[in-house]
Length: 132
Image (cartoon, rainbow, N blue to C red; front, side, top):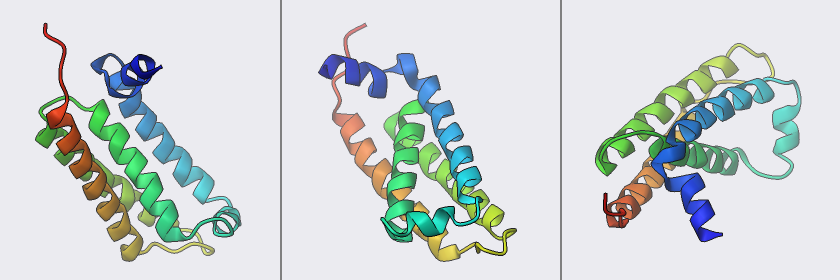
């Protein structure tokens, strides 16, 4: 099972799937978040802080493992990707009368991305790669 999970979540063989999976999840998040009442229903189970932190941490993980390069490059790509995604998300929200774009939400997205990318950078640097 560990070998399967490693192949699925960490191998270069599925990196492209993780990258495009992150983009797809982000687009779905924007669409579902634009449905009237959807955000209010989600707030019954978790606060905006928790939703943003968890969601954008997962997206940062997927971007980190879906990109190519050294760990530092992957971390920067993930953080910059989340910066753009978070800004787009908040911009889209500003068009709906029942939602509002918030710089505070974007800052939470950025904090989640920085923390997730830093952890991944540290773990990826320790990772043993199979000999070629």
